[in-house]
Image 1 (cartoon, rainbow, N blue to C red):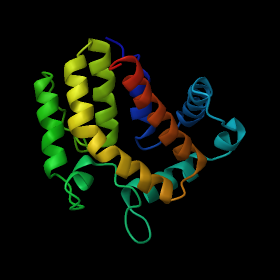
Image 2 (tube, rainbow, N blue to C red):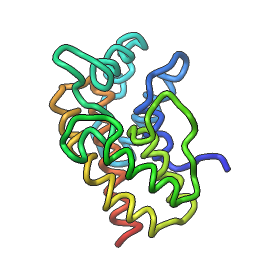
Image 3 (tube, rainbow, N blue to C red):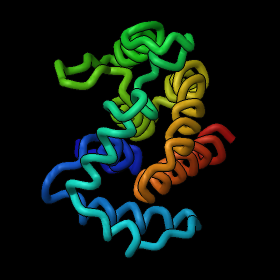
Image 4 (cartoon, rainbow, N blue to C red):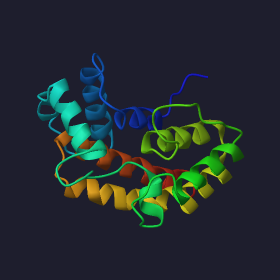
Length: 180
C-alpha cells in the first residue's frame, strides 16, 4: 500500500533534508499549511538553500552550541531524564509490536518523531482507531508538546516553525474527526 496520509509527509519533513527533495517539500508544506488556514509566506520558505536547511536540522535535532535544541526522541522527554533509549523508546516499540510491526534496522531510533508520525499515519490508514487512540494518549501526547515547545524556543527557520504548526493542526484534526 502506498502511504497517502499527511502524517507520512510530516514524518519525511522531520527527517534529514536531502538533495532534490527540498523544493517539492517546501511547496507541499506551504499548500498543506494554507489548507489548514495557517498564514505562510511560501517565498520565505523557498528562499532557504539545502545547505542552510541541513545546517538548521543539525542545529535543532542533532547538535548545536550548548547542546541539541530539540531532541526528536520520545525517550528524552517521557521521564525528563534527557537520555535516549529509555521509557519512551520502550513504549514506542511496544506499540509497534502491538500493531504487528517490527522496526527496520535504521539509523534513527524507533522513538524518533519521524517514525512515530509514520506510525500514526499507518494506524489511520488501517483504521486501527483503538490503537491510534492509545498511542496518542498514552505515548505521543506525553512528549510531543515538550518537544514542540523546545523547537519553537530554538527560534527555528520558518520551515520548522510551519512544520510544527501543521503537525499540531493535524493532531487536532485527529482529535476532532476520529475521536469526536
